[in-house]
Image (tube, rainbow, N blue to C red; front, side):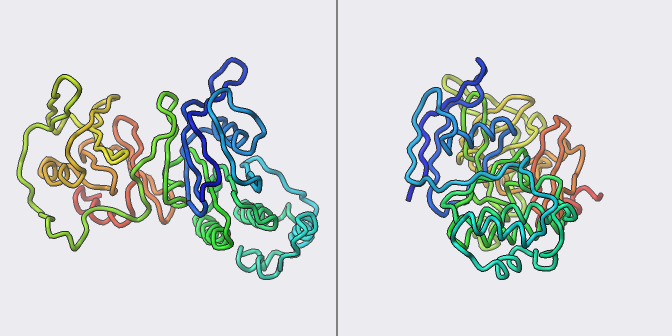
Length: 329
């Protein structure tokens, strides 16, 4: 069932175009993530909840039960955890079992602590639990993993899984694809010119299928990679390509600051380019190993490769050992 449907929505504030060409359907029980800035995210949420009207386009909603959690949300520092939750439980009028929820959100051991004594990890889970007390149909969350510790990220993901099991649909925005890979199964990126663009990123899906009968370890050599444009075909030597990304099922050759579509699938390109120093670091990415400048460990579950062009590419954790073997770091 569709909860929210946005069709070509744009929003202008103070003569500045903040968002444009937003086309998105939020289905019940979907796990959506959108990469966008804080300002874009807050405007996006305001449009969904009806706090502001679109400058153009249409928004159709089949639910009014929507809550928003922003990174700037504050707490009542002098209250205890249990006292704080009891207040909101009364406001919600549903009288949910707090003891069980405290355990599911890994907060049972701090139930008597004042909120000012909580860590950031604990506060984020408490805010999420507060939202659950109202049992919203749709929950909008901004940048929830920012500045959390590795254990805090793991516990937040467990708490978020509980929210979804209770029947709430969750849409999350973040600056970082790394976050969205952990939090969502369907990921979009907002581009100023193109609007929302669905990526082919999916969590924990990387490389070849071990049962793929077409898999070969020694692909045939090629010398040029072709990109077919409207009136011409452009050819690139492998060393000219920084990386290749799959977007909406189309392989995009990234050459400097430009993108060129390829008619070949990522699997076909991988077979052709392995002998030229390309590595499938993620299901949706092939990188030129010569372009790697840095490796960042974002958390125990997430790694990022920084290329010489400053592009940030996710590295699947299952591929870390393979990369280590290839470049001996």
